[in-house]
Length: 413
Image (cartoon, rainbow, N blue to C red; front, side, top):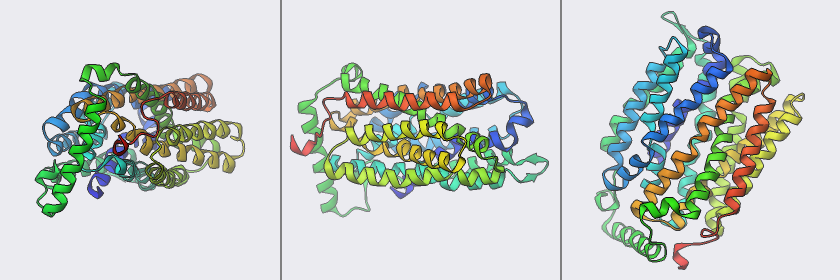
């Protein structure tokens, strides 16, 4: 788990650091508008969808470490190339390819965790993994802010940010091939009695789920709960990435701080998110409840976004509302990603998680693009932020409509 945590920090940082490049000089140096930035930030997720479902199945059927290593090495190379772009066309192409390279990483890890953690422990495991999201921003925001100030070899800081933050992915990708263990059966570091107990426990869970929810992959794609999860995730990801890509610009606009000051203030919502994700993961597993833990976090994100617009003239209060938003955009994750495993197993679960993640991540295109488009037309971020708020609220409705996952545990079946 600590190793996966580090991998996800690097992945998430490479995914969203374009937001800091925007306020750090890339927009001015290349003559990009907010619309160009929003489209380029979002097109990542179009590429991401291409290999998402096959990637998830490969983790289940082939090898997790091999697929994760391939992803990391290829996205590290492309992240470095981003530091050398000269035009909007190059920006769009490299962002699309970066998304395609990273496809399957997150759902693959979710599937991989199901090889090692019992259902009743899975929300805590996902919570620990997903703390990498706020931590990557807490650490990465100041680092990105500091890199904006350098000018080495005649290249501005925003270019060095892409280069230096892409290199660790290549190094860790190579290490992954030798470090990760695909299945408990292969774990030479586990005592035999613990290995046997874990294998038998997970096999018993899979048999119980298979007997109650026996579905083919195509049936799972038509399953009411899978479709509701995909729709809920789409609208929530729209809000999450709209916030993540534009929060440096939003904070700079409302506060007037320097780029370095913005990088520190923009980390505050992620500090709130770190606390929220740990509490929600622990409490969700303790109560064996997933739906309300997920939906209430989404509602909190929606509320925080609305109030940040209402209070935009009072920067400290608006930033406090963005902290509530940060708690919501992180706090929904443990409960949400425990939901598919409550009624699906094996290859069906892997394919369904890939479907949910791939369709949902189209919202990663919509959110940044819509905020950039509205900002370009109105010269204000308020309209885009209200759109993100509505999206988070809609997501909560889809989650509350779920039936098969209401306080259901495999152990009680």
